[in-house]
Image (tube, rainbow, N blue to C red):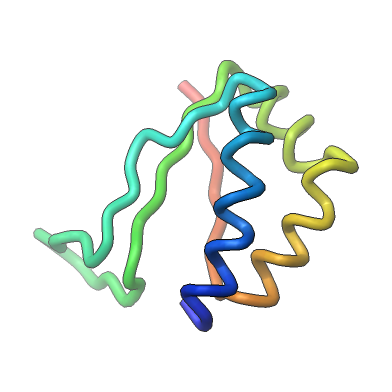
Length: 84
């Protein structure tokens, strides 16, 4: 993460928005223990949502757009989604 204090601005705003759409934070692990393979990131965060459609709606929402920019300003992340 490039700027922990700046990134906190994103966190403070994104969690209420996630709750509003029924998403929740499942895991936030600083320095996850790697049992096999390579891991070059400092943190692993997993969120849960009711459906892939809900994720896409959240990701593309006008409310989230400025938060994406804020996140990009203060961090370097990789985002992946998957469903059962």
